[in-house]
Length: 289
Ligand code: GUN
Image (cartoon, rainbow, N blue to C red):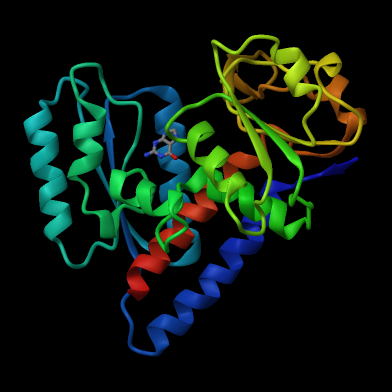
């Protein structure tokens, strides 16, 4: 069993990006600049956003964090997005999800200039992704592909089972794993809450990608020997044993499943840090354009 070490791989990518920033600046280019909008003070979103801002710092990017209370109107949010769209110093814009119920997430996503949509969530960019055209790939699926590539996990002709059909992970990764690319060329089964006989399907997976948000959902009896598991789930649970008072648990019961795997991502330290590295990579791509 080999660990797909997202922490180390993301640090490698950040070092590569830092070198590229130095090169870009010394050749007269501009410093990459990522803007992030955070609405409300959801604990998990605060953690993700502060990790994104810190990562910008680490690689030499500028960052701007715009915060709103959770009762902000949709119009005010849309006018901030419009302002950032027009700001030529800002290369990338993300709006941290989820948003409060009174705000239409799709309306907000569509308001972001597709050329600054470094999350790759805009319908125009999702369309390009599906057609295998150059675009920003959504950061979490892109991070999964990068891990598979750097650890040379064979994907062509394999059966890839995806659990969860979210717009952010399950749906795009199922498209990406089926594209005629490397990584890719899988036979993909996308499963969700209405899927029948999930156990039987996951047992046939060569590559199992789980993005459900249910702690320890995948157990040893649900997978076959030699499977490669990508665990995207991050559930925060209270803990008396950590400094923060929280600990993170994946969708896969790691301890009981790991010995059946050829490869597995840990939680934390797997897909999570890769998401941030790929967001930075997309931002640099936008700057270079
Ligand atoms: N919420 C959970 N994951 C993400 C992400 O990758 N981007 C944004 N904007 N919000 C998220």
